[in-house]
Length: 475
Ligand code: SAH
Image (cartoon, rainbow, N blue to C red):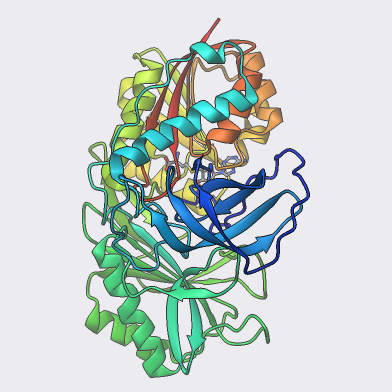
């Protein structure tokens, strides 16, 4: 999921739709609708009098009675009032609220169809941005995840007060209502157990949730991360104020009831802001990190550092990136958008040296200490944006011949693309979590690079989200 810390779960249909015909329709209107396809965000798409209508939870070839929930100049939004003809690929969702919030909206769709959808998103994105030679790209079948449920190592739930009690869950689509989620089948069970236990503790101690409307209260969000290798948990309370009442009793309860929690942090993010995480992190108890293992190495992970959300599938993603670069002992590798250095460090033994950059200082500190932790001496990481650091390295005379980029959903910055087109590294892997920005970036990169293959890798079963690795080589 989110490669940055912004909220992702307000699903908005694509904006680039052609002008639509005027249609007389009111909120609450119901009409039969045949679903033609899935949109890029996984919603069913049908046409009501030629106007596009998005229906979350509806699947291709289904006939539903749609009920209009929002009217926009270019499209309608609707919910399923009645399912008249279900798809043969429809399955029973494990979570009853799967259609209400982002994060597991494909629980109703058979897994092989999810994999086909993800490959199709790559094809559709290429067709939209048309990078050079796109019709002939080798877009491979999506690699399935080893586990379709219970894979997600991080739960980041909003906390609210409802009827005198705290609830924890995700935002309802297109709203700021929180759906209480006692279960969430995609989550690693340890994350959910700790989430429910901590919410209960907050309730008992009467530590108030943040209230958006009055801008008062304390707890906004709880983020819980679990290591697959060590089962250690890290809990971060994201708060409106630095002051956290009943801190002592809360930490004592966590220590007693949840011994698997090895790190407790507080992140302060004051006021009503669209960002989930703030800049100040206060260490509350235990270590400042938990330890995860990937590709035979150990990684310390602090609260604000990014880590891939599906640890069991991460090595497959990284092996595809390695395969795309065909590295050798003379190669100088740049690991751009490095996080805690997981890609570069795991490839360091195959190359002469690794340099990386990453914008979150805590992640860079983790990356450098992770190099030490694993006895790696030929890798170093710097704080900064890829688009600022790369030109500086170039100006300083640094030369490299291999590059892996793993940008957030926004894709590569234009300044970085220009730098890449100048430096022209011979070995180049693009790891993407957003097929649309990837295709857009390929349209620029394909003036110098050929796209040898694109390998979709499913990191997020039960969601429409796709990851892919692109192998690029110089024309
Ligand atoms: N390669 C890592 C992290 C990928 S996620 C892994 O596999 O775990 C993308 C990372 O890019 C995040 O850690 C984010 O903090 C960082 N980032 C976002 N914008 C950036 C930019 N402009 N320059 C460098 N890093 C950036």
